[in-house]
Length: 151
Image 1 (tube, rainbow, N blue to C red):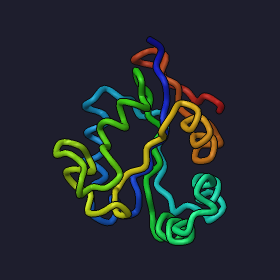
Image 2 (cartoon, rainbow, N blue to C red; image 1 turned 135 degrees about the vertical axis):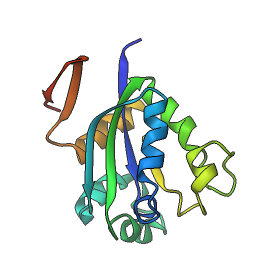
Image 3 (cartoon, helix red, strand yellow; image 1 turned 45 degrees about the vertical axis):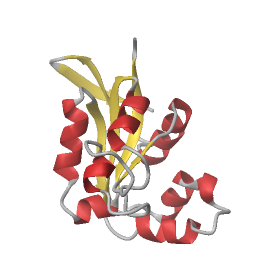
Image 4 (cartoon, rainbow, N blue to C red; image 1 turned 180 degrees about the horizontal axis):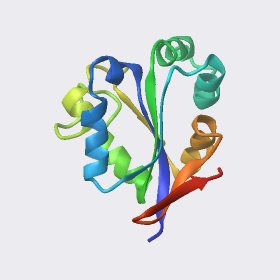
């Protein structure tokens, strides 16, 4: 089966709590490859585009305030069925209800402080990757060769 790609955001709470390496290691141990990685404070425009489907919901302003409050890590991961694999590793939204062994189950503190965003479908992943990596990603073709790949 061909590799697919997904977007993962290690949200400000993951960065602030020093969990970036731990969370990233879980994805890598599962066989996912990093094909894009950025450490940044997102702009309001970038966050608004990312969370566009929530624009009319009452929590939208607080969501934007949180995601733009401090640095996060944006990851483009590639692997066999990347979206469902990542969603399983992440666990349900509310860390208090997420099973042990998932990222949110082991580290999430609440529904809003849930550490990680993961694309929910291949279509969402494609849209979200263009928002966070407009310049493109790194393509893996052989073990000894990598090069830039336009989006």
